[in-house]
Image 1 (cartoon, helix red, strand yellow):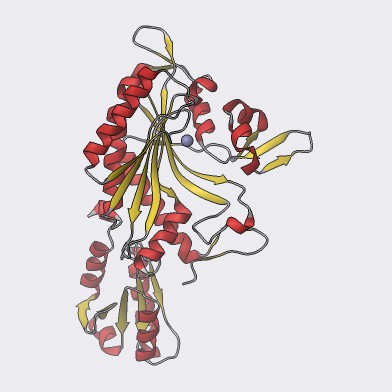
Image 2 (image 1 turned 90 degrees about the horizontal axis):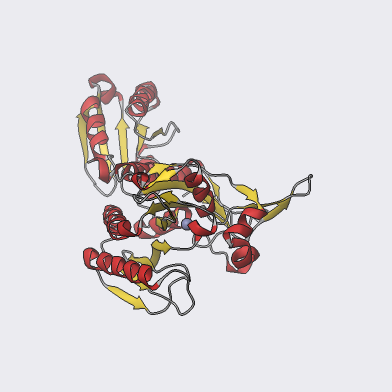
Length: 389
Ligand SMILES: [Zn+2]
């Protein structure tokens, strides 16, 4: 489908081709709108930071084997970020925060790098560098429940809009070895139970499987043919803010450590793209389709009319190509149907004279003659993303 490729010199890193990148960008635009509506701010943190920061965050000790590092000429060691969390804590720490600033919801489409042995790599599903739709919610202990419920609502909306109606949640609660008081663990587990209730979907308990720094929820999506994919996570964290010295001034005038909620909804955008390719078997819904329309002139005398039509489609924000090859129209139709192009605008001399277009939709044997204006207006409506309908 000419979406992407891999090659030996960059194992586990995607070369996105124009069509694949178009799809990828659609996911980002969609998520941006959804997040902004839900009260998130978007930030961007450095791809490489000095090793000392990763030592302070604890990642070097726990995750060092999976980190890419580089030595600079001035003898410093930098690490490619395997996670965005420490960067977001730095942004939080900039300027004194008060309880009135909370909850602070910080999002980033952060590209992370994690070393995986080459044998473990698997297409888009398991890569070495990927983009997370990552966010961290900094909040007070009292805000944990409301924030986790909001995150859950957002996730459920998003999964539904992508056609995943069958969602399961795995709930991992407190392990033997942990940080944080029992009181805060009680409160957090209660919060996540409230989420499970609000979600109203099937869930299972992974007893004692939570991280040492907090309990978590994992969202598993079932696709059209019954395969399960783990995508979203909501992870509570009572450790990292304190470890990196993040505080806010409470209503009592004292310093407190915020709770940090790590959450990703698509998880990895590379992987989610892979899941969508599987889910739709390449036949993407109109709003995601890398090419939405192909204009196909029947005779070369209609080329000029076709080019003008393509220009009008592009101006209307539609992703439109034109097939000017000197081939029979049946051949063009067959080929673009095969490539799963959702809509073809077929034009001949009659269409050119009448300022019309024959609209042919994928899977539909009949074509419909419409005025150009009408056809484009209809396409603008039909290509709207689910959140814009
Ligand atoms: Zn995080």
